[in-house]
Length: 367
Image (cartoon, rainbow, N blue to C red; front, side, top):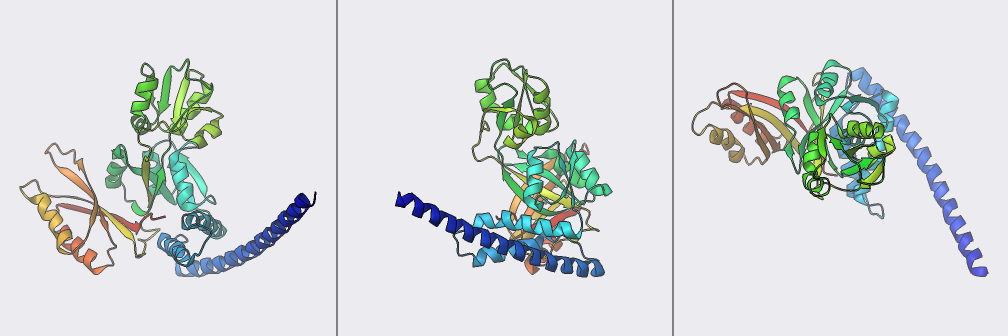
């Protein structure tokens, strides 16, 4: 009988110590929030933006550098993003547009980047996300730009050309697709509803398990979940969060063809309201260019990068729709324009381009 009594007493003592630490954490968080409000007041006098992604990246990097555990480094970023999100909300509400409705991966990306203390602005399409951020309906937009399985999200790339928005950040998510419906079985499914990208990412599973069932493209996976919640003959391909949001059973988990499937999202905003982030030490610069349709033009475009030792991390082409077989090239390079080598490379690159647009420079998503 003595053993359990001693064990219970030891457990109670540890819980009391944890409660004391929690109270101390709360006191320190309130102290930090007070300091953040003072910073916010100084920013208002200077006309500086509330949100500085490079500063937040530096805070997280600094904490990782001094962390001695047992808290893992990969846990630090999510914790401190929520702390910083709550502090920003004390200064001013941050309105973030994303492809909705509730439960989309775009919403998850917005929460992962900004934290939960935001004003959510769900949109019915990627076009509306761009319009909302460009027109002032939201301070920022979160848009998918690339998937590890299906490649670029063409609509997002095209809209970078058509709007004045700039990229000031990025985040990526592990994308786990689930088959959801009101019934817990595969029987009786007439159609599977999801965003076209999600349907493509689950092509093999759907072919093997539901070969005769219609694949119905909709505006988002969460919209597919909403439709499936209203009609028992429909199933959706969506996240667990969407399933919980719409009260659906997970009939089959993780049906994506690539188990390492990830989607990269860009954070966009009006450049006059939120200036280009300063160098953080691990940055990406995105641009879109075109060159004259002549032999060697693409080679000449890339020479300045090699000459100055600047690494190109992404290169995509999109038709210019001019009818002349011309293309726009979307390029990501490692580094920041404030760095001398990058500045020289970009200046020389610009001189050989028929069209040149800097889409943004921002801290890499390294956490």
